[in-house]
Image (tube, rainbow, N blue to C red; front, side):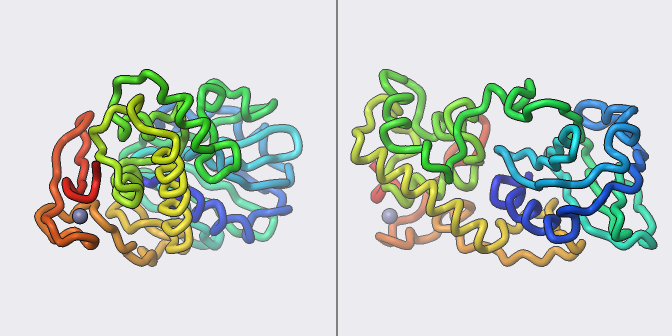
Length: 271
Ligand SMILES: [Zn+2]
C-alpha cells in the first residue's frame, strides 16, 4: 500500500509535468473505484489550469482555478506521467490530459483508490476534515502527542497509527519510528513521559523524511512516476527482520500481531 512517503514522492514526481498546465481532456474508463468518480468531472475540470499540487495525509490534491481534484491511491494505485500516444492498459482507470500533451494516468488494479471533486476548501472535505496534523509540520510536537495520549489505555503503536491523532504513520514507519525511539510498541500510550514522546516525535519525523528522501519504500504494488519500479529498497531497521540480529544490540528481532498488523521490535532495546 502506498504510504505517506510514496504519496509525497508521487506529488513531487508529477508536479513538474502538470504545474501551470491546462487540463485539456479527462477520460474516465472506470467510474467504480472506492467511491465513484463524479460523472461530471470532465466538465468541471477541462479547460482549467493546475495552480498547485500538494499532499494532505495520503491524498494528492490538484488545485485548479475553480475547485480541486482529490486523488487517493488506495491499496494498489499508482500515478504515471505518459505521453498521449501511450495506450492505456487494463487497470488504467482515468487519464487527465494536459495542454503539453502529457497524461496523468491512474492505475489501480484493486480499485480502492478514489478521484473526487471538491469545489471549496479541501480541509472541509468529509474525508479530510477529521484528520489530525501532518507529521512533518511544526504543529506535530511532543507536547501535542503527550496531551493526546493522556490517560489512554491503547498501545502507543495504535495511537501513532490513528489518523485522527496524526496522519500518514503507516505500519512500516510506526515500527521503524518506535525502534528509533526505543519504545516498546505495546506500551500504553498514556504511560509515556514527555521526554520519551519527544524522542518518538523526532523519530517519526526522521523516519518519514529519510523515506521521502529515498523515494519511498519499495512495495510490490507501487512503481514510480515513469512506470519503472525505480525506487531503492530502503534500509529498514526492524520491519520485516524477524529473528535477524538487532542492528543496535544483536538480540533477535521479534514479530507479533497487533491490530491485525505485523509489528517488529527488539525486546531489549525497546522498553
Ligand atoms: Zn536491540
